[in-house]
Image (cartoon, rainbow, N blue to C red; front, side, top):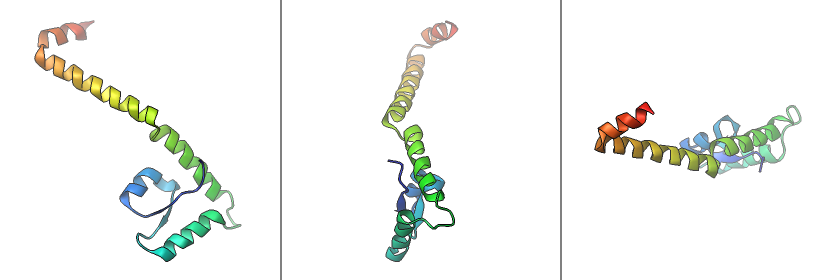
Amino acid sequence: VGLPTVAFDTPVARQYLGNGGLFAIKGDADSLAEQLLLALFPPHRAPEDIPARGRWLRQRALTDFDWRVAGERIMELYRELIARQLSCLNPQRALADHRH
């Protein structure tokens, strides 16, 4: 939704949020509260930074983690695996198909 995102600092959170997330020390409630306050009430010295992170995360979600994108990646992988399997089963046909 284009909002800043706060998460505990874990490898999975880093993978999904990249540099756009606001990270709290894993398991530390005070650190989580600090990051939530930062997201809700950005400092006056850099008011655009926090909202910009949210917009960047939305764009990242749309381009990298959208189901349509994931579905296309999965389908391409299946096509490649099927083509490899067919070439193993019938190398002459695979050679002929490759020439066309």
